[in-house]
Length: 235
Image (cartoon, rainbow, N blue to C red; front, side, top):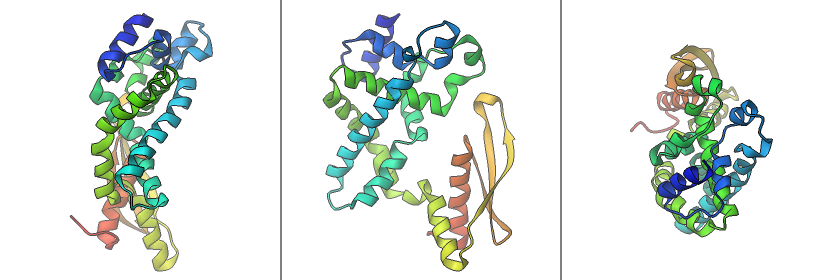
């Protein structure tokens, strides 16, 4: 099984693997190790910790050279969104890595493999495995090729991605009051929920938004509220 997983990862990343068991661990959810009485370090969590740092370093390097005139704060804002679970889950789906996730039988039935956070973690864990295999330069090139469009999208449309911060800064500048976010409705099955959030200001509902997570719905609601209040220009 180790070699099979490693072989599939090679095809996806087009980067040779040297230590097959690392890639099996990188794609194994903790529910599987618990179900099969396997050691804790055979799930992705330790590799994800390492891969998180690898990803941030690689993206930081890209931003540093792509935007030579940007101060540290601007690069940090872009990076925080580019390395978010939402972006990583999209990349994981796009390259087909999500199909390789190994989970316990019960958790798999509950849809754990479809969770945004799990898909993001296995991506980072796989980066951690490649780092231990001495493939950082290759991973740097892979991330540059697959994340460049996300980096440019965030740079050009930052308000969409960080609308909550923009809205709060705007409302506090008016009367020191902050927006209030309220969960209105949750729809869909456990593994595919859709959340609807309303945002209020001065006791009045200004806008609402729907998303696959509460955070996503809040950002969309905040973006609409920013347009209503004039905090950002409508497109």
